[in-house]
Length: 230
Image (cartoon, rainbow, N blue to C red; front, side, top):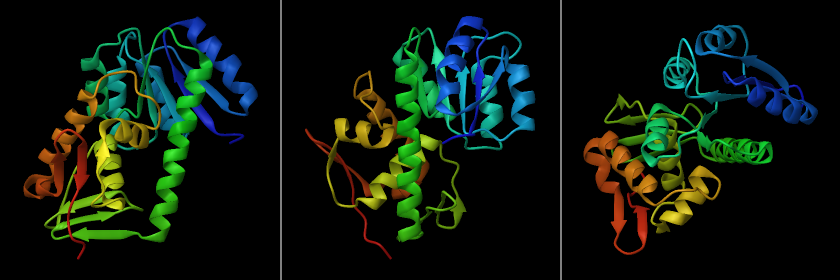
């Protein structure tokens, strides 16, 4: 995607230099910020294709920047961190991070993660054009606007909760293992354990309130979405 603008936010010069040198020849326009405040200033000025965001930075950390961005935008965010604990990854996904990359990493891996996000977005857009709205009793999903309502009340889902629900509702009554869900929803071989899926299933069920009944645990196998369309 020549000419798409990427925001790289990291207080380490060498990280920004490495990513700029690798991504610029791919045709991307690169903007850089060394702290969270500078990042938000740039984000207000330009429309970005993807934001690559470090966690530990001066002035404002990556978590704070992510929260501010998510107030107004669903732009894909890839979080960078020297910490690889499962808790940090899950916390990032709860805030709306699309992917999480642990330092040190190769720029090739980052580009692969970016392409996975692009593929998921393209697949979602294609499916949305075929069938824009579905309804399961009082649960309604509009794929083009990404709006989900429960008995007419608009829900506030994280991007990963929405993507998980979107995948399930496009493939009702089919059982998926945790590995299949990681591959289909996260779009790559996730380096972690299956608690990532279980945690997001729990979060999604809580968000869906009494329509949590549609997400069925198939013991020893995985999960499925079971609900009649209306």
